[in-house]
Length: 68
Image 1 (cartoon, rainbow, N blue to C red):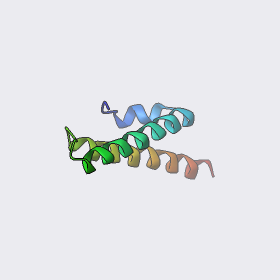
Image 2: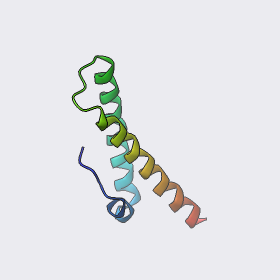
Image 3: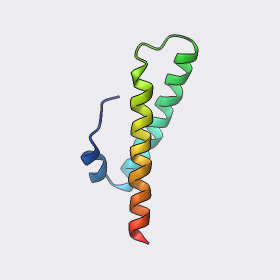
Image 4: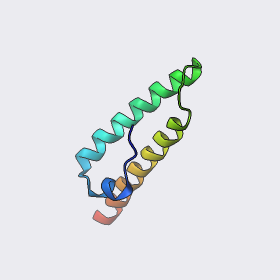
């Protein structure tokens, strides 16, 4: 998964963030399975995926707070 800059994430709509979040969670699941089976090529991908998920959730949370 390519690294996405925070500025690009902030520019996305809520629907786009939702799709990206779902894809990131699916990818994280697959990476965890590969790690358990000792077939993970790049362990750093786990960290990158977790960071992306956290960034998306933070942006969504901030948007909800600003709308209230």
